[in-house]
Structures are given as C-alpha cells and as structure tokens.
Length: 292
Image (tube, rainbow, N blue to C red; front, side, top):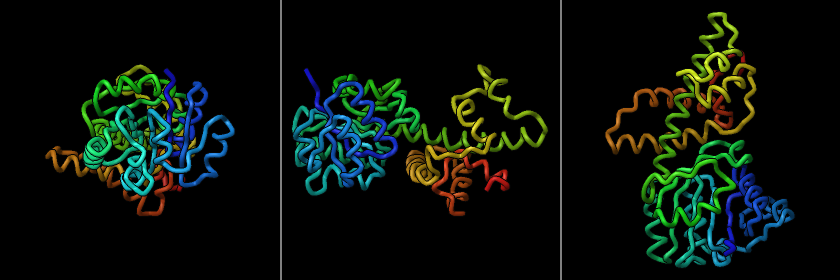
C-alpha cells in the first residue's frame, strides 16, 4: 500500500530530507509559512497543501522538522494546524529537537483529541547526514507505530532506534547534545595543546584512528579545525537552546553535570560575544583568538 507522506519544515535539514523522500519515490505533500521555499521541491515532484490541516487530511504520515517547541506547538495546535486535519491511523513523526516535557504533553493532547499518534524522532548527523541519508534517529512512542513508519524513514537514516515511550526520543537527543557539546570543547582544547607542543596536528586523526581516543567527531571535525574552516553545519545558538533543556532535565533528576556545565559556559561565552551564528567547530576560537 502506498503511504502518502507530508513534510513541514524545509530548512537546512528538512530540505535535504524532502529531497531524499522524493528520490525514494514517495508521494510527498508539503506545507510551509514561506511558500517560495517549497517551489524547488514542487518542481521535483512534491505537491503543496494550502494549510497544515489540509496536509494532514491528505497524508498517512506527517514529518515535521521545525525550529523550536513554540513553532511545533503552533504547527500542530494553531489555527489550521495539523490537529484540525488529524484522525486515528495517522502518525506524526517530529524530527525537530524540542522540549521532552512539552512533547509528552502535546503528544497526549493530540492523541486524546484526534487519535493521531505522535512519535518524537529527533536526529543526529547534521546537514551532511540529512543529505546522505545517514542520520541517527532516536524515537520515542508506541513500538508498533514506530515500526509502521520505519519504511518511510529508511531513506533518511542509517539507524532508527526506539528508546522508549513518548518524550524518550527528545531525552536521548539531549544525551547526544551533552556529548557533542562537551566533545567540541575538548577537541578545541586538545588541538590547541597539540599545536602548542609542536606536533603535526593534521596527523592526529590518522594516528588515533581505531584507538581509544578516536571518534566520529575527531575524524570529521578536527581536520576542519586544523584548517580553520568553520562553515556552518550546526550553530552555537542552537546548542545553547538544547543545553538549556539539558540543565532543566539534569536539575529535575538531580544528575551532576560538572563537565557539561563548564562546556556550556564556554559556549555561552562565545554566544555572548556575538558569535551565536557560528559553527560548533568555531569554539576553537576560544583558544586561538587569531582565528576570530
């Protein structure tokens, strides 16, 4: 049976995911607040709905990738939002990174009012992962619903893992963001150390490949930092938004977070200096002010 897929959120990540859904032969329906952004995808085969509600009426599965919790609430529960076209047997897959607590509340409200299932499925892998279909997806929600949408999401991700019930996907994303933010600060510090002690820092990823100090971020981001190539794939502003959620969750759980708290303060320093739109790799500028 053909599944009609709706998509809302044609940003840097979303646009690449729309392209992959179309390339996989899916029937894709789009809606957005800026219709001009959707024209390239319409030319590639997508159809355009006049409202989010109409998109939901026409689709079996709706995928969203929006900026924050407020935007997600507006898309679902605002005037002519998804809830107005929702019903049983429809599934919402939210690939945004938003509040786990509000996700649980919104998912319960949507199910109670319409019968539509909400799966929180934030991703990791950046724009490159979105373009290549190699994202890691952390999903929270009913297991049977996640299995129903797995074939739809296959063109987008390398792995899709159910990590628990509603809200668990967003919580897992906060674990990811905790690791990523801390590691970026650590990479910056260690690169500065390597350069100061006079070794060829460009050789470190090769030298550590397969060792205990190796990581995906070391292999991918270290070379960019060595070359002072800071093209934006994920901003400091976005990480600050996510780390605010991490702090709330950690406080509620009484979970000590001294290392990430320090990393967060260093990121906050760059943001307060007016560099919130820069890439995470640009944290190296905290150590190498000549690169500022």
